[in-house]
Length: 256
Image (cartoon, rainbow, N blue to C red; front, side, top):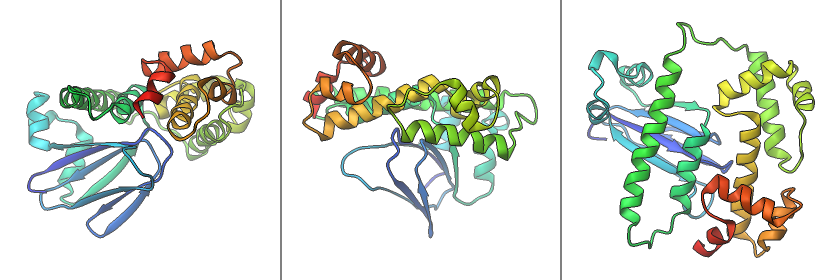
């Protein structure tokens, strides 16, 4: 890098992704990675699947500060702290649902569209704003932030993994609270704080990701895909898919 650069890498799915920064290799399966790259750094990103399955924004730090009209002493402390270390630094954040949807829109958009460049520019700006807004919100927490014990964090992760591994299971809150080892109110609060979305929204996102992948990689009918994902009526699946992605599942298949 010829300047101080911040990379925001968004991977909506659970696909394998790795970053090579200098001589260090980091495997990463989580949604949002933030990488600060001081001048002179080198970054390589690779994925284990073919095709566009993630989105990475590279932004000059000084340009980012000017665009956001943030005085040098009051910029996002996370980014400032990472850059002050004068070495490449990688950190992870939970993937907010709004960021996930914006990234999925970029991934699924047809590159041959006559207005593709304009679309990508608009979505890049939207993604950057959504990510920075999330980081800013986190830094507005009371000094010291919300302290989450390792036990509680592990419990929330067990719940997230259970939902992701058993997509079609209609979990009850009581079942999930037993998996987490905490009461329902605490689980709902901590899950939303850590992952930026409710348990219901996370489950919906996982189901829709599975639906989109099946539309792209199989010849199953839209109705069959909906049935396999737990929708008894094709119309229910069509409505849920369109509500999530903004277009019907049949349109997604035609794009691919």
